[in-house]
Image (cartoon, rainbow, N blue to C red; front, side, top):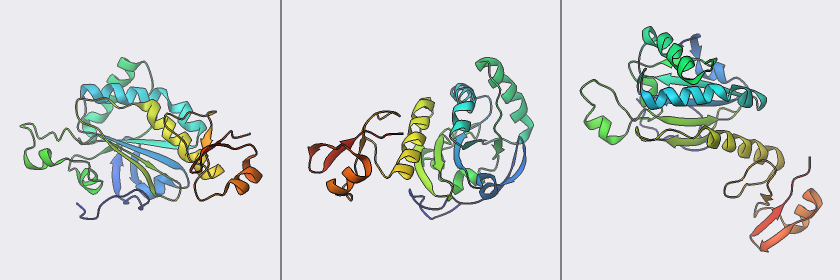
Length: 219
């Protein structure tokens, strides 16, 4: 367990763990890639079964963006394999990414995935249902997004993919993205860039307010 708060821009804590594809050092696993770490409270949980299948179906999309995926479940390896079989059957897909075994919840505590209720009152089966987080980590091993979901609400994999597109576009092109942005939509010129410099860099600028300026990215 760590007392240090996880913040956007902080280095993702490193750990070693067993996974369905062998033992890993997390920083070595990340290497020079973007990485998504998403967690689950236990094997054979219904909402998580649908989520893992959805991530698996998007494997090619994440591959195209150079993004690695890795799951976590707070069980040991003994049941991970059978759960993956269920996931593949229910969702008609093939889970290709590793799933971490975190029965002792060391990684869950390290990444602060457990809410206050579960700290005070873990249910009778010992399942902390709030181990339901998503972290996007960049090639410099910095945390770029943190999302925590309640047990009752399934994650939106399209949103995770959208954030990856936004972060990668912003890093590459020096822009920010507005509400509900998708690839191909206009982007925002950051306040730190003058309109004159923005015109030199991007071409046409549409100024809505002095602080809100849009441009269309050209390939």
